[in-house]
Image (cartoon, rainbow, N blue to C red; front, side, top):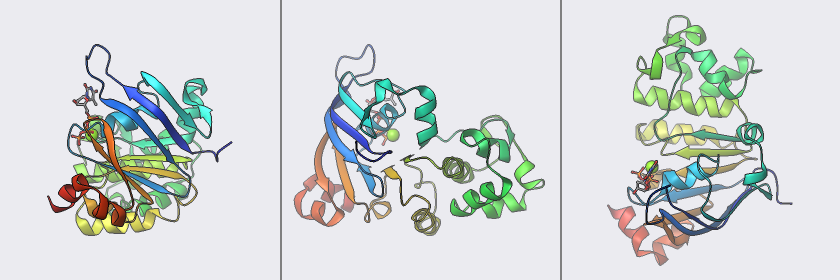
Length: 242
Ligand code: TTP
Ligand code: MG
């Protein structure tokens, strides 16, 4: 079997229930542990939809998704949530404390582990400044923290769970360029044995990715490293220069 955490799409097609045209057509790729797979493409291309198939928010209409070589459809909810952490495009915080939000996928985590996750996510500074720190309250939906802080807390939550597969949906674009760079540098070590899939808007976020998939109208129109795509893909060149 492929290593745990490996995500394989085999000729996956998906349409939302009731919709006529599929949103994703014939998607095939493998995201391996120890590698970063980046997905880039214009708004509406299907990037979020593709990521959402991995924790089974929806099932593929055709084709197959395998996790560590096992069909996703045969994995239980618990196995999926224990192995895959997802930072959604609109990150969500629950009403409760910062600690309870961070322990969502990691009930057993010690405070020290939570601080470590916060440090990596570049969120330790503002949490340390809040009254009560880890015990400070988050209001419903996380409205008493800024959008960028919410995003970093959700990244810390994903890290605290120590999954085998990480999904980041546009998780770095609300951050300023310098925080984005620091965060991604800090992520290298803790995610080095995991499969990392990143949806990005900014090309600078993904130039180091092991493979980049260019998604256009639900199809992978090009794939390769940044350097390869600069040579081979007009769509990629347009994204880079836009
Ligand atoms: P997305 O998968 O949301 O496209 P995207 O993530 O690439 O776009 P963005 O960069 O703006 O985040 O949408 C693809 C298509 O699927 C689009 O036509 C909207 C449709 N869609 C639904 O019908 N229902 C849904 O729940 C979602 C997420 C998308
Ligand atoms: Mg999206």
